Image 1 (cartoon, rainbow, N blue to C red):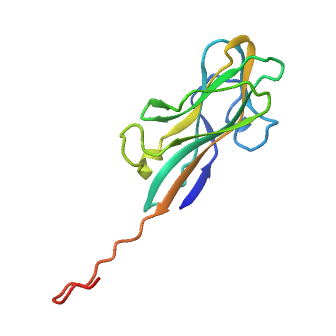
Image 2 (cartoon, rainbow, N blue to C red; image 1 turned 180 degrees about the vertical axis):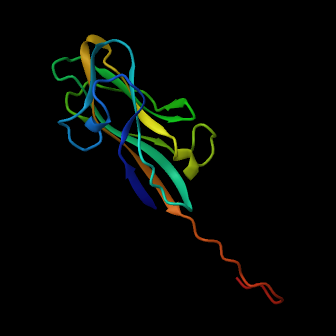
Image 3 (cartoon, helix red, strand yellow; image 1 turned 60 degrees about the vertical axis):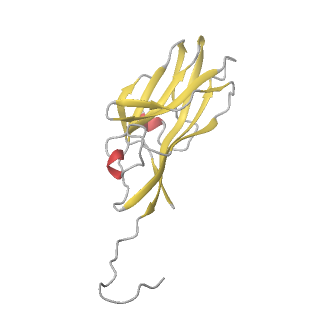
Length: 171
């Protein structure tokens, strides 16, 4: 199995948190996107350059992210990752933390949620990914310091035909 890490290269269809993809495209906790003083859900989506080889079988797509609550407030915050295919968001389960330190989170899609079948390389061409965050309080905040995709695949063996002819089949 092979894994490819794909980091954001542009903002996606929506950006409701402050700052953009450049603040979450590396593994530094010193840059981030965030939203404070809000009781509702806010979203930010990202796109990436897909560099998946041809002739592979994709076994899963993961969204990995680091997140925390605002240091100055003790209110828990909610977050959930999503992938966007064909204009529809497919959400991972909602997570909650009260941590003021960044927490690592991984969400996995073993199959394409739009078709409920195994992933195809073409499924990833226009896919976006992102997070919903909810500070939960007018005196709270949610911070995302990193988000990226991991695509796990194995190379499909090229088909080789055996010579045809009379004779016994041997196993």
